[in-house]
Length: 116
Length: 113
Image (cartoon, rainbow over all chains, first blue to last red; front, side):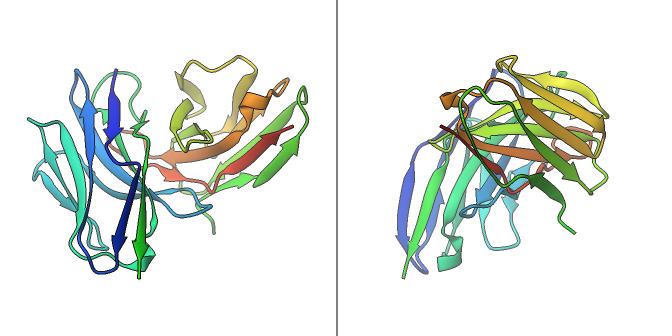
């Protein structure tokens, strides 16, 4: 079984400051890693994902995450946040093999609040 | 031209009633999912269908029954609703394959009184 732990339930930050949202996972098999974002009263949208290759992945709106296999982490970072980044962020994993492909196991979510 | 749509958006009902939530995707995806998000925002998969075949069935009470009439639709029927069923239910879809991005609907907010 897989599990995902997001170490911070809430992260307040000022606009234009850097931010890091932490995610650790546990799995006995290899996994793919995802970050999804949920804006208020909306469904989730993919922010970025790691499947293979370079351990640093980037999104189109300036977020990046680095897969660290030895520390089983996939922390999300942004060097300068905007008010519009205020949302809840979910880290998730799915197995790379087996029959239940596509099953996402989510962390508890981190609410990012950007203050002016 | 909504990619994944759900109806209704809000559902308020009494305990013991039976209700259905509908989901449709126009992305041409083969795989569809139902997730439940509880009051603490924790998201957990319930079911997954691939080409109308059930492939994931988590530990969900058998009062919940998914139905996929075709690969563009995945409906969720809930019998004998209980207070604990109050949650936001999200439908999602993806292409078949590993590591594919899942596209989520806007959610159905169910409140059982």
